[in-house]
Image 1 (cartoon, rainbow, N blue to C red):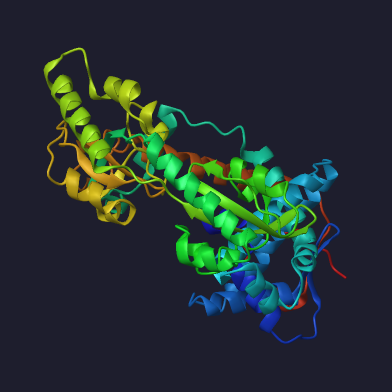
Image 2: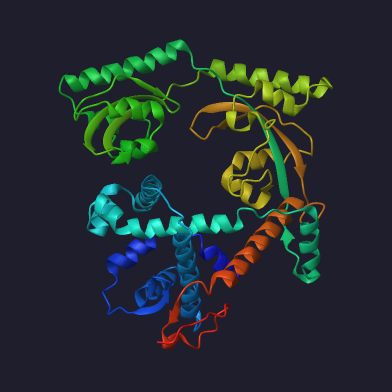
Length: 455
């Protein structure tokens, strides 16, 4: 089984499936394969071909055969999951449905646009996909049972590396390990009182007859919702930060909250409507501003800390980060930053600019081990702060080798072992289920030798 087929076992139905289902005319359907009690339909294949075409992916003479075998692998996992009494809970199904709906809504713009586009209510859309999602979770659960015990030893990594032809070894671009110490200036009591007073003023103006949405449009610091008169759209409580959610869910339609503090700033919330566990609210967000004086204090503090790190032998950058950094994401890693793309501690310089352009500019001026001056930057939630940056290590572009790229090779080795384990499992269990394939697909160059029943 190829890596492509292995990856197909971890499924994700995308926005394109909504497009295909809503736009594609109905065709006469038929069963083209049976695995145990599970069927594969002609439309299952054609919908995927349509999606590939829409995504400008190549469709070859073997594409339909490959897609059919992908689906047969999936149905084999479903069949065995049922035989082994593997179950997924209603809560798991609903959580996954909600997660995917959030993705769809983010892609199409709003819940209202999704409902309009699909021609059904959110509950109806969820019901349409419920069985599909439950099957996906069954496949994932069964697959995890098969590969969950896979472990990789140093000997496995060396053996895998030795098996790669020298002219096929991957080329690794320049990468960097980076650490930071962040000083986020505190907000003054006067500024907090000013912001809270402003929101109380807005609340009184609404009580006196002004429109909440107009005030949100004019004054809210949340650009995404301000353009919608402060409206967030139907959301689950889990989608909202806890302080906001707790305040919002206690409101009746038309009712406004008191001033609510969250990590984003201060909010005034108005309930629009409630549907079961989902709510739609408006809000006005105001963000307290750090004074230039407090920003300068943070800069001076980090400048002084840099001198200490460079002159006191026992004070390393990592120790200083643990003790002094205000960034909880990196502080306990000794300030070391994690790449959000692949979860490693290495950043390819070619892509770092897409993640944090100012960080790229900073490390380009540093030598290994060197610490930057305190630099002003904007945190992920829009606050202004200062940070020290240390370039821990930078690698040169090179052909992959065990010394420099062990972690990457270890991960690739693990994926190969998981793929091998899946192939072994399929070979073992392919005869445990009834298999039938439409004669029109009898000449397909399948990778697995299926025991096909004759009708």
